[in-house]
Image 1 (cartoon, rainbow, N blue to C red):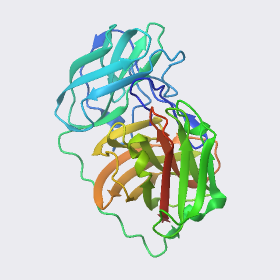
Image 2 (cartoon, rainbow, N blue to C red; image 1 turned 90 degrees about the vertical axis):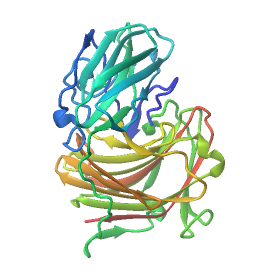
Image 3 (cartoon, rainbow, N blue to C red; image 1 turned 180 degrees about the vertical axis):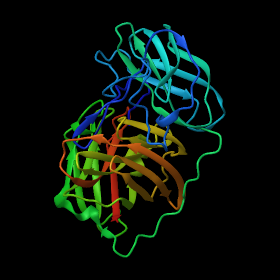
Image 4 (cartoon, one colour; image 1 turned 135 degrees about the vertical axis):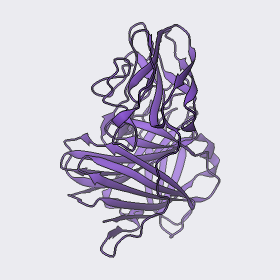
Length: 383
């Protein structure tokens, strides 16, 4: 989500807690990126807390109170593998006149300029390793908006497993979770799209389309850029550290091209720490994205995710809690194709009670086309 093309006011919420992105913008300067340090994925980082005055601050929130800059599109570089010198091309949208541009790398401003141009094109150097890159535009009042965050890999990436683990004999296995209707709930406001809707439904025990004979149908209808979240929440302390989430997804073929993104989140709350291990197939941007819980931001990876072909699609995620304050995306298998992630992120503090849950979210595009999604054979294995 965080629709950044044209007129979308970026915002997002997981479950019942709203999280907003870091903004960036400051005075004129041009700098060269450093080594990235602990702010890079795989070392427990993320974009915040940012140390550069041009790349955000406490709260990880951009200031877009008047909505006058309604989107920033980072056209290049694409997420994923890149050379050490890249051309940053970005465009801002909205009725306000742009007053300031900033390009941020790992929370540091690597380019800043006072400029009224609606687009920028700037070459920057990026050292070896994994880094987070984004662009921001601000108006004269200081209201700003930020692009999606691109994960940039320069040089050979760290080894990452593409093999799903075999759970031990004592693992806890929750099967056919799509039928566990007592724990499911729906929310549009908490999904924090540009618009909200009350026109949504969740229908269990569907025989068509289905693989098991009992799928869960989710439906969302609203104005453009409406999001709806479907949550399966189980209260109670869960001290497991390994999670293998396996399920099948089916989209209404007639509306497939109107899905902006389809989101799949697994979360754990333990001792006042929220491990929001979210992912989405971001069709609008064309890549898989993962969620940085502490930074409150989606990160576009270099793994393509175009609109799906008709039929059922199989998703398997293996993720871990690796410490009391960190979690790691290990391996994604989509329709039998494995991808190694090896990304580590920090948790955020929360007042929520201990719990574990899964959720699916439907995100509409500018057309506001009604969306149908079915899930089946939903299994969560924990150990």
